[in-house]
Length: 382
Image (cartoon, rainbow, N blue to C red; front, side, top):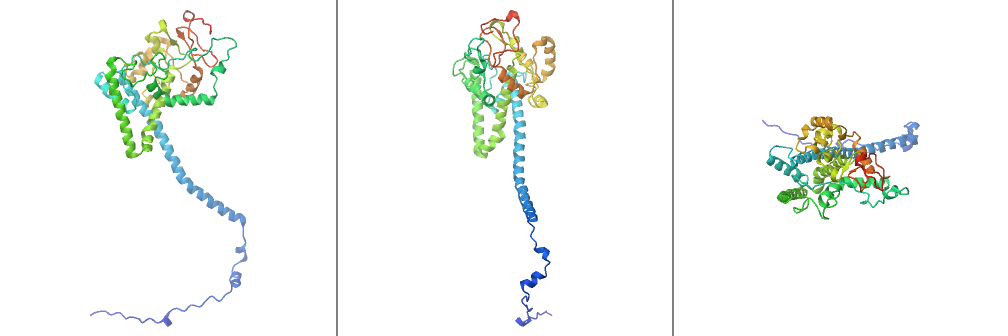
């Protein structure tokens, strides 16, 4: 048996009938209470304000996300810069032979870490000198007399001083490597750390310099190739900015180690290795971050000057023994790092041309220490 459907025949008379609205607009309006037709400007403005506020909140969401993203990048750059600097310190340890008893381990680890950070890997540079103080004559300052206006010669506006300080922090490291800026003034004009025949190196070091150059060239190629794949901006964010932070921290730390008005500088017969080694300052830069991430490079640098082959992890204890033995000749400062950087940049202007035990003078030509009488040289400038 099958089922059958009954097909209804279409008939418009069967459709629902529609009757048009019979009321006038006046009659419809009369049905609505009059209070609903009262306009309230204040209430309208409140609704507009609400909409504008909601629109602003909606705009702030992507702006906030963008700010959060850049804040996250800032945190990354800060810590990655410190971590990279710690890697640089490990390479530096290798250069001194302090990382391992095995020379081949020091050579390989030093080559890799230095090349990674575009830094020459030279195990020994007997003629490598940096932060050599400028003398009175270097700056063209005449001999001291009552009418001499040091401020006119050395006085700079704080803005210009800040500019020069930032320039130092950003450019000093590459400038030192490429042009020997702040290095020994008696070296030839084009002295640099990449020329195998440079006065900085002995003939025995020539091949090491060439290998170091090849390592840096390989890293330059790697960065260029990475930029072609992921884009220069990405490589800059992940690698370039942390590398600039390494340059900043390295320059800041070494500058504060070797530049302070309380620290002596030796020349001629008064210089010897141990006196030169003590002419540096231990500083607790960045607190726990400096200790953990920078391997105590700033906290315990004096002992490294005396015994560069001592591993950094023995620095804290060894420093206590050194301090107990040399007494007041051990120099430390707990001044905040950036405050010390600003003050020392202003206070350490030049040393005198005469004498073999010297102290920095400030923009007024004044020092805060002087040599003992038996080491003091009375000059026209004093």
